[in-house]
Image 1 (cartoon, rainbow, N blue to C red):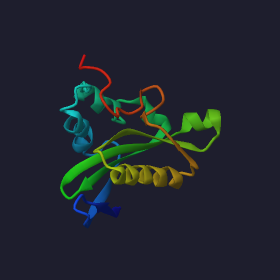
Image 2 (cartoon, rainbow, N blue to C red; image 1 turned 135 degrees about the vertical axis):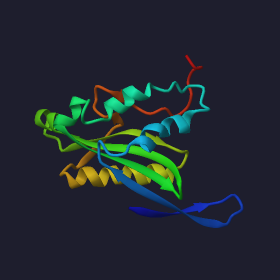
Image 3 (cartoon, helix red, strand yellow; image 1 turned 90 degrees about the vertical axis):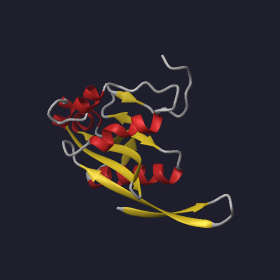
Image 4 (cartoon, rainbow, N blue to C red; image 1 turned 30 degrees about the vertical axis):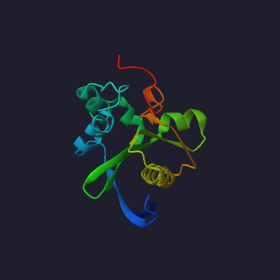
Length: 160
């Protein structure tokens, strides 16, 4: 999926930026998806990177039991050859058994400071969960409600 986004520059001239959204199945080559938060937040005093081995396990169908009762798709956003965001979309069948509310979830939500990129990723997640019969999108939960919840929008405290 490729989106053409119109941006207003400080010079008053309009330019167009192409945002490409790529899908990644769980277990496929995930390195760009895994390493993006470290690139994005490396200069942020509030960022403490998680252990890469733990993140790799949590996003792996071989190691995380969440995948036994959920459908998951990962998305990355690209502007040219530069990754500018990531997001997951998931449908948790255990949640649906208990709540029967046609709710899908999104998570692993990290983007550069761009409303266009954020919207493109959330639209991709929304379309994917809709293709699974869901009518709502809730999050961010990475991947389930018992894992990481929320997003870091700015540093609230010094580095631990």
